[in-house]
Every structure is written in C-alpha cells, then in structure tokens.
Length: 275
Image (cartoon, rainbow, N blue to C red; front, side):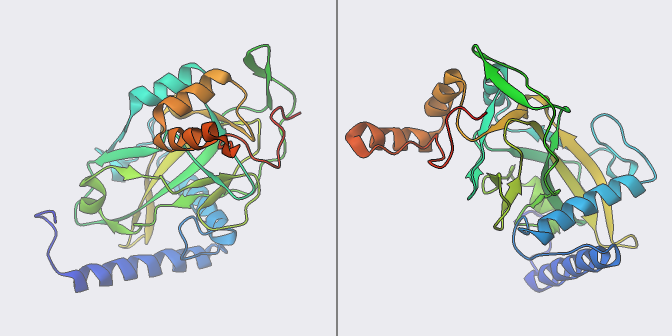
C-alpha cells in the first residue's frame, strides 16, 4: 500500500462510494445513464462517452495537443509496450471485432504520473475515428474505400477500478485488458466499432468529487495504437505478428495444428474478405 494513503479501508470505501454517487448524480443532471458494469454495456457505456464529450465541451480550457488541461497540469501518461505497438503500426494494425466482442492485442496499457495521490479519479477508454472514409485491403495494402458508415452509438469503457485514488492509479500500469471490441453492442465491457474503419484509442482522466463533482483533466492518445477494425485479418504480416507476440494466439495455434480446426483469427459468421 502506498505510504501516502491512509490504511483506513472504511475511509477509502466511503470516498469511492461518494465519488461514484457524484458521478451518477452528474450524469442524471445531464440526462445520461449509468451502469455499475465496466464499460456499462448499452446505456451506461454511451452515457459515459457522452459525459466525456460534455466535459470536453464545457471545459474552460481547450487543452493542448497532448490533452492536458490546467487542472491536470503535470499529468503524464506513458504507453506501455510502445515498441511492440510500433511493430504493428508499421504494418497498419488490425483489430478483430465480433458480435460477442474480441479483446485487443496488443493490450492498451498506460502508466500515469502527476496525479494528486489523495484525489479521486475515474479512467475511461474510448475509440475515435481517425478519418472520414472506409478502408479496403487491395493488392497487399490498405487504401481508402468509400464513404464511412454512420458512426455507432458513442460508448466508452470505464476501467473497473474507477473511481479510485491517484496513488492507486500511479502505483502500477493501468491495463485495459478486459475491454472487448464488438460490431454489435450487446454486453458489458464492450465498445462498438464499425468494421473497415480506422480508430485511435483515447485515455480520459476524470477527477471526481469536490465542488465541480467531475472534471476532465486530460485526454491522451498515441498514434502508434491506431488500427483498422476487421472481422478477419486481411494482412498476413499482422497475422504473423499476432501469433509471434500473443501467448494466447500461440496456444490456440498449437490446438489448430493438432487438427481441432479452430481458428482464433476468424469470426465463423464473417467472411475473410469483407466487402
């Protein structure tokens, strides 16, 4: 336990509960919905995404290119496994989306510093479209492929440790290993994306409690984490990178080689070459 956190779990529980109550109250005042599930699924996830947008719009300062705001001055967010992300980025990374949701690899994980150790924060992850068109894979490369589909309902994944003390968030990397990417929002922990569209993950830090109840203190993103959502991998180089670096992919590959016929890279209800 960090030295600057009192070993008083009753106090911590009370503050966390109060912060969550403040969060839900603020959302009700804005006509939004909340959910206790990580990511909220349905209304809760969309509500938190709308809340972030509202906080961004109502912020007195617009923040700089790194998403820093006056209240969050000094806050730094470092991407874990940056070199691995860059390997995938060079090949134009792809992430599988399915009806039931598929977890990301590489995993979005960040290290935070500069937070107030005794203040309460919620950490959210969402995905922003990087352009205004669809993509298609032709002759071994990704090229623009027409007008984009209508954007799905905004949804954000709320880290399950939220809300919590700044000291908690800074003591170890904040991993979003449980978030699932879906092309049909139907469960908690899922974020809905359009296939064949390019996205950039964004980490939002919201300070909760105090006079303003909630305050967006920073939005951070990393260009090397961009990816195209697909229902099946298109680039063989990406497939090989996933197999090489993802231990779960290696395990499933061994099963497949033994004749099971199970392919972790495909959604059985989707075509390998989406139109």
